Amino acid sequence: MTMPVSTDPKFVVLLGGALIVTPRLRADMAGARVVAADGGMRHAASLGTLPELWVGDFDSTPPELVAAWPQVERQPYPAAKNETDGALAVSVAAERGARAILLAGALGGERSDHALMHLLHAVSLEEQGFTVKLTSGEEEAWPLLPGRRDIDLPKGSLFSVLGLAPLSGLTIDNARYPLKDFSLPFGSSRTISNVAEGPIRLSLAAGRAILIARPYDLSGA
Image 1 (cartoon, one colour):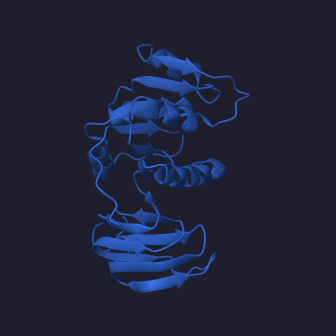
Image 2 (image 1 turned 135 degrees about the horizontal axis):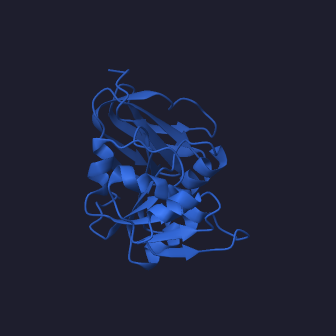
């Protein structure tokens, strides 16, 4: 099964992690609607975007950031809640029709627990039928589920496949270290630090994984 290119409404969810504005990020955001999650609102100015909604408990939002965006509707939640601000923002985007979601500011930052949760949440969303990409601008990530997936990467960029379970039938084409119908044990480092020869194609028979790429790091060229 080939994972189709989504033509459904695209939403960008601004999260609180690091975010560097790059041409790839701007291209990913083109034509998308935007929802901000708590402190992720600080990225709106550098992106030149006006979110349609700002959600969260606002515990990581300084007063000056609130004062800078009085025109953006806020949807507050209590600090003692069962979901992260990012998960709430994704739920709002889904309620508003999103099927393709870019999690911007989802990687890196000061909270590794949040970054890992974003990756796991993205896999869950893909299993529910959403198309998901995560980005910090410098790094990008995609969930990998059974099926085929094409990833547009520049020649020489670094990428890794991280298995979240044992993987079987893993094939990686157009890479310096290709694989064919490979079984990857859980916890194996075999698929770390590969190098794209241009756009890559992956297929997976069984398991769950995350692909993390550095499209502006051409040290492998």
